[in-house]
View 1 (spheres, rainbow, N blue to C red):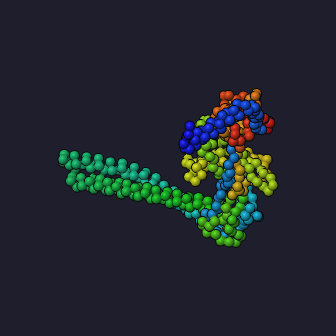
View 2: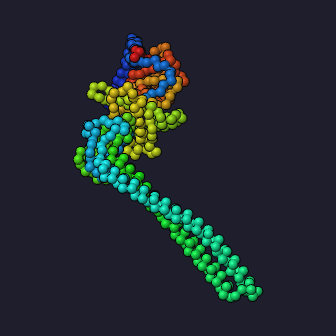
Length: 423
């Protein structure tokens, strides 16, 4: 039977494919079974800590600047020549409250005082003379009032007698003239008394003015002696013995030596934390540290004022603390104005919290602990505060025995196999 070449080629191709398929199938079914090697689970080495729930009041650090509580610029209230200054009248000199700083020449003011005293003596003499004249005039006025009454009564009686025809008209005219004279005399005396009383009041006013002049003269004498109103340090002295100063001339400045203020800014977070806990910020004690060479000196202060508004630049709250001398009696150092300071202020009280490093927290709310099978267990926690570089957290699922992982690594996840080392 003859086949065409085309059919023979197709048959041969199909045969080759079939034989190849059967060969592969045979080798697969007859090949020996090879078991895959078991792969070991990777273990991660971590560090852990065992936190203890506790009550803690952390301290928060800020930085501030020392400011003098008071700077008094002395200026003369009077003019005069400087007669005396304190022995060490230069910048940095220490003066105690009540100590004389300078004395001015008193002689001109003492002479003024003496002249005013003499003027007052003369003025009071004039006042007494007016008082005597008034007393005399009042007595005279009383007599003249009685005389007027008598003259008026006599005149009215004369008119009645004239009608009865018992006296002459001339007699009536005489009595009328006497009555008119009595009225004029009384009116004049009344007017004289009024003038005397006006002059008495004017003299009294003059006396008061002279007394004011005397008081001013005495006050000016007191002003010639300038004393320190509080303990302090002299700064920028501007006078010397023999120099004439005018009213208002600046003599020196006095910087308060006993109490200093510290200005600093606390965070809005701390402010809100303290207020939320219903604790007071005013009178809150703060620790203030000043770097003196290689040593750090501690001062104790109390907050005395809080800004009523937020600082626009920092977003915090400006606070003023005062360093009182009595609170730092054993401290031989003093805060110099302008000193840069570190300030520690106590935060609110946190109760039943765990303290952990920042590295132990994942995604702001998760931490991991090591369970008895050396695997990680995740816990949702609430961050309630900070203590320096550590976080204060709350979590009901944690105990004092919990091994909290503090190593932060990217592969951390639930049930991960680890080997822990206590920090």
